[in-house]
Image (tube, rainbow, N blue to C red):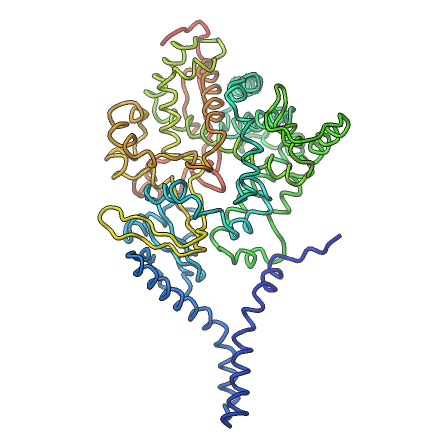
Length: 592
């Protein structure tokens, strides 16, 4: 077995040549002065030169690089993005603000504050590394579509999330990404994503448990429930058998004596889901530290420790699938998904490399489980705050489908208000609020709003936020911070979105647009139809729901009206769940 060095030691070894070069250069220079020029430098000055050479060299290097970049920008008729305000060396104050914001602040608050000073695109240089943040649709369009070949996930992102995502589709570039994309695309055909038996099975289980818990007099954490629904649906879609996370039961409120039990704490699906969530939180936190993340996990890879727990759960399933293929003596490459074939079966026909298969299934699981669970969570949160929208949505459900019939693909296509509710939720609470690319070559972004074109140097990280872009009043109108599904139906659609489609990209865009976009719409719509057939009202359980920090009430925009704490790792979620009560519907009801 190969010895795995601690992350911090690995980083020291990687940086050692760079760290040793300045003092070695000073040593050579001093020896030359002594031997050739016959100049003897006092020992105290030699010692000082050795010590100062280590921090000064990277600082001088940064200054020189900035100078070269500014010259390159000018040569192309462009300028560098404005620099975020920093009072401390190496942008340490910006880093500390980001860390503090991740704990108690509102999502994107630090970036919005910088945008008020520097505009919607700026360079937050942290730990001497450029990070050009943007919430500008024209630039996001360039990153995702028009200059697609000039941007990739990049080696730094790969390094940060490799222990979580491996070489899966979300963590790969170039030919590897194309291989994964080609491998999974056939499985997201219309026939596949409109086959609703899986949704029905797990939605019925979830809603049945929901009813029972409410009848016991307890509220339910809706986020937990739909996370179990989407996990069971995703694993059955992927593997052909679900992980039975709904079989562990729904949790009781923390104050209940029934909240903790050995059965739920030791249930394999709960152990897997908890480890998987913690791994995502740990992996996403590395983004704040850039290439220096190993110094903050010096002795152990916190993501790997949690993923090892997940692998214990996943690996036997993969092993069975590979053995099944060998037993059937199947061989060759199959480009099309066969009827009745799971995604795992499909992947096994592409490769027998268990690591590649495991990485890809876990990548798709994050996309198929976490994003849809987040969408459903924030839909129900918004419906709890907007009863008029709930009433209108139920009217559409009961008119189009009735009080008990299973919805069909055509039913959901005709439910325009359902799609508008989903889109408005995706606008205000996009499942992936922040994302990042790295420039593979120097590029120039076009001028916007009368400004100058922006020069983006090669090998520069470019984080972008659809969360902040989706809330801009100059893009969506003065009511941009209000929840109003009609904006996706009335004249505002043609005024704002139609002429500028890149102001709304909850599923990304361009060649890397989410393959599961329609799958997510179908799954969320199906579950909501079944839920609203069963229940007629929803309210937050304020006696259980943990409120946001008191200072949020004095904050700007939606921060002041939030009733839950929104957080993000790879995807957005409610930090303490969304605890709700719902009233059961009259089963004889046909239309409201």
